Image (cartoon, rainbow, N blue to C red; front, side, top):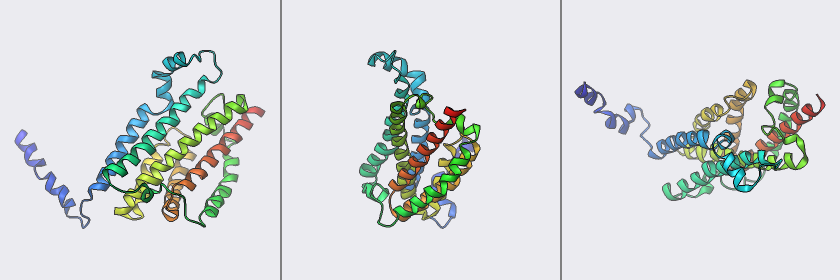
Length: 257
């Protein structure tokens, strides 16, 4: 059996080197980006989300900060979420770009967008607005948003949560419509947008199905727009605006029902 396995996998490096005979030579940077994406998404899923903080860190942090009776202790998990989002989705990709790829982060969308593109993002938000109003009447969305259960308790609760929520959106766009799509574009062109959309859709699993399927459309549109504007920043502002609007609408529904 050992000899058979050795024979079976013995030609693996040669197959990889010539890419199975396909007329597309192996690109080590693209392979590294895809593997790193899988690793970073895995670590973020298991250790970067609010659920991990609540189950493993909250008790000790609350005790350390003396927040046992604080009405704001629920915000700690979302603060953790914001910090880990920046770490896994902005800081680490930037380190990889600088020190491994020996490249400028500006070539990966970490820059202001080119003039004239802002109006298209505004148009996308205005297009989304009636859809947001419509789905906000659905119980599946009302039960899901805002993530922070006490967001409607006061303006401070809601506002502080939205800052953390917004930071998470900026980090998300920096990773998917920045690091991932720009890195793959160098090898695959606009096919990079489709490749990026697959894991982007998958991080929405567990949310209402309408939103998960909508993520496919949003991923393609925002990916293409990021490449056209040469920046992920306007997409982050758009994404945050959509999330903020949904939270406002669902909070209003919660107050009147």
